[in-house]
Image 1 (cartoon, helix red, strand yellow):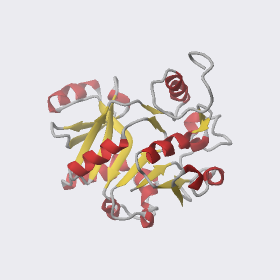
Image 2 (cartoon, rainbow, N blue to C red):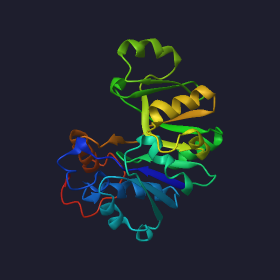
Image 3 (cartoon, one colour):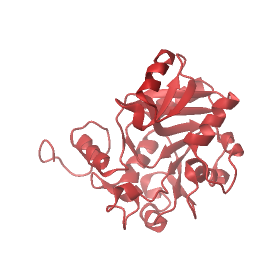
Image 4 (cartoon, rainbow, N blue to C red):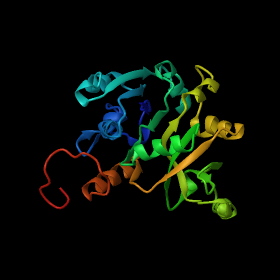
Amino acid sequence: MKAVIIAGGLGTRLRPLTYNTPKPIVPVANVPFVLHQIELLRRHGIKEIILNLHYLSEEIKQLLGDGKSLGIKIRYSLEETPMGTAGAVKQAEALFDDEPLVIFNGDILTDINISQVIDWHKKKKATVTLTLTRVEDPTAYGLILTNQDGQVTHFVEKPSWEQLANFASLGPTDTINAGIYVVDPKIFRDVPANTVYSFERQLFPAILEKGWPMYGFISDRYWMDIGQQSQYRQAHEAIMHNEVAVKVYGSRVDNRL
């Protein structure tokens, strides 16, 4: 099985850390961040990873190479200009096969059990499976509603509290898009080439409208978007407190060091 990591962003919210360093290799616990994502995917049986790159791409390629030293195969898909989340993955379409594809947003630190998500996707015979995570305040995110069977019923971008109250009878109203998907590669046939295109705002709502089977897998594992400095700091605190299962290099010398 293959995975795509969407890692072409400019990292503007993390500046000044990203002025001269691409976000995927900004250190998290003294390790280039993307290595935490690669290790998670490798641990769950992913043999080949396609990295979507744009900003300072050569630095990332020099660090990772072909992936052999990491026990996987790495291939690269370069964006000359940013194409949106779905548009970026569309550019790598020639590298896909007929198997389900794991897609991973490049901002996410997590220890989500990807094997469980893949198994759920296959069990439900889904076209798309979205990993969902619970948050206390979903008004800053994209809310995804599911029915009792886990099938996605609604997408609501940055809902108001009034909207959340109205949706309460339909299912959980604290579940947001965790930025990790398992998809049938055929979905990219409907994405126009060389066009800015979004998973969240265009492709997924279109798939829902077509009635293709789309499911949500709700995970209770640690999840953090590290794309802002405050969240970047929180991720380090979570690692120091053993709240997230990631590989840490070095020896513990104190409770928090």
